[in-house]
Amino acid sequence: MFVDIMINTMTLTVRFAVALLIASLGEMYNQKAGIFNLGCEGIMSMGAFLGMLVPFMIGGADQVPGYVNILGLITGTLCGALLGLIFGIVVITFRAPQGIAGIGMQMFGVGLAGTFFRSYIGGSQSITGINASAIPVISKIPIIGEILFTHNAVVYFAYLMIPVCYYIMYKTPWGLHVRAVGTHPRAADSLGINVNKVRYQSLAVGGAMAGFAGAFLTLCQAKMFTADIIGGRGFIAVALVYFGQWHPIKIFLGALLFTFAQSLQTQIQIFVPQFQYYEFLTMLPYLLVIVVLAFNRKSNKFGPASLGKPFNREMRV
Image 1: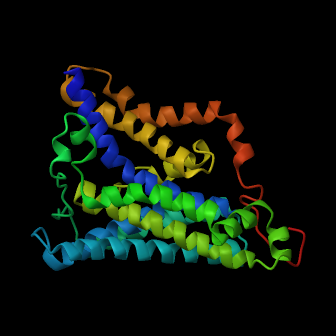
Image 2 (image 1 turned 90 degrees about the vertical axis):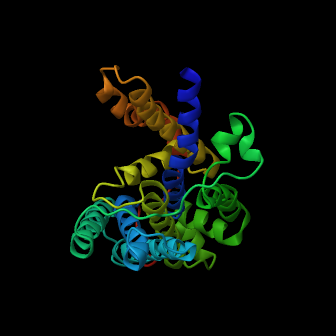
């Protein structure tokens, strides 16, 4: 029984960590540029709804061509980028307090997605989505094959984003600009870097990744949309950026840790139904994040020095 629980838990961890991982990497771009975006949850909600809406409007619960599901992913991603830019207008152009504006974006996105869902769909509806398919030969490897090579193509694409994000952030001129405007925007401005432009670009990238993460939830995981489908993942993504010290590899490890705890509690409830304290199991992943952040006091020294601070080149702000 123990072996079955662990294999199932690790298999689910690989699959379920994707949405949290992509959203966290997107939030990393936001924060590296000096923008604290608490609206990730709302952007994910809109991405989740639109990702599901496209195949539902075309085929309903019936099987649709693969490109339709890809179109749903693209739609959710573009919506996320647009919401990121709208958030940028509020906090970059008008220099509104980023924390309050982020909560507003979260409420706006979740409320808008729920309203559109009730208006255009009405009730619980499922879609076929993007199904998992085992990779021939290597998926037959005992234990490792089942854990790593029985997922859909979007899962593998998501994990390829880890080295891509690392390369962009630390090996490209644009990544250097992002880090510069998040650390010392006035110095970056003196070198000819358009601080606001780079921050807008970072919010578009971060929003696009949050929208993609939401669309993944409905197309590849739940195969349906509900008003609470994000389930706090947007806020966990923000916490994981701190936990991972704004580094893609550490953020990836944090996403795996949280998702492992989440997957483990579901497997214990399935394989050990007589376990009476399931409420404790449900809160365990979130408690784990709080404990890790509480003991990870040194993470702040790795953060962007100008995180959450608006930039005005005409004033010492």
